Image 1 (cartoon, one colour):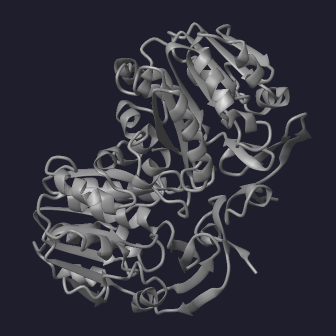
Image 2 (tube, one colour):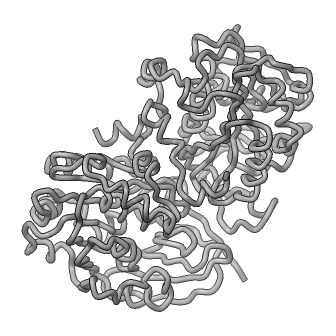
Image 3 (cartoon, chains in turn yellow, orange):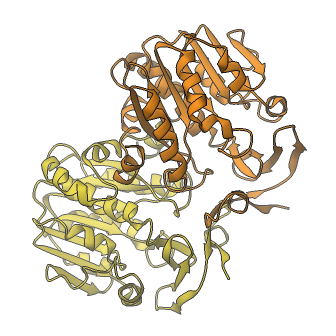
Length: 283
Length: 283
């Protein structure tokens, strides 16, 4: 029998007063790692769903709207991304999209929680499908510690984290983003998942306060993701030199578009067009 | 005590498997009109909320994302909108935004359900605030019957309806849109609320099949609306002559932007940049 899963975000962190609610069937896995509680359940209409600490991470049906956007917007904004770092992203979806770019010679993915990777291989084979790609270096360790030792190494860095409570808390600090800045090459750029502009404005203001103090160029872009709170999700874009447009590989993006479900050249520009109330958050 | 309101859409129409869930407090009004069940409730975080036949229509906190987008995109796309027709829109939000345009000499609003208008005046004063504007002609009658007698009269028509089940069912048919076409001037254009591109693709394909057969130019644009299913909502844009850009009043939009929460010139263009899976729906 199906039942309703209600995201526990509201009870855990603050009185948001709105919650994600999805019909679910059989539980495929439930377990506690050293870092968080992992649940994988079937849904009748959206494929398998991953839940971390009570918050929906992804469904098979809609994950493209997150993974294409966190990867392709920064990668197509960079004129020649050869070395890419992913912090987090244990399901493998961001890595899958990064590795579509033939110019990427090495993608290093640093995920703190080996259980997420292991169970993604088992229950999300279409998402974890590139985790054995020879161009991928997969490390199960703390991304914050990893990045301390990286200097001038990466063209693009993606911060594919959970919410800023629990294991990802350190990924929203000035200290961390200074290290990201150091790990990027002189013309490097980064993207980070940055929560909902409707519900998490305090987090966003703090994050952009940090980024604006470190990077010469920062902005935000949006994606429409049904099972994240409010249905609209944001990504921070921060760069040492290039804007999102100045060196964009538009011809390459045109070539890849037929194989994508979300991103295309018009959307690449359109996703940076922010409603007025969101522009105020990041100013 | 607060409790959770869960949208009944799922039970009423089809097994969607996802639902809107919002914390609510006191019920301010509950009643049955000749057309639908109307509920108005307080929410702890999003102001008063209107519910029609179990589906969330609006909250005070987020209504701007719907009303600005249904009104300003078509009105700024038209070079000189003098006469505007709204079908539906009983809460008054679309009319409020239309009447911001000084060039609009008359806005006719035809709402079938007088109870919605009456209770909006009472419980949503910041939304219904322009219903007594002398440039507004408010008619409580069936929009489908009204439009039969309108020929070559309007520059812009807005279809601000509920879902295509219940009283708004007739607003999604070819017969209705032929009448809309006749009611528009030779250079007229229209916008209609067009459901969620994640969840209601069948309805959208049928609607765009109809519009593509009647209007020379059709496209879709998107808004981020937290309490509508999936959080992403679409509007159909259909025109006899002008594209959304060809005759757009960009300078006027720039002037109005400081007083708006959502729409600005970049967003006016960006909202038409559709993800690939949505482009396929409307092709």
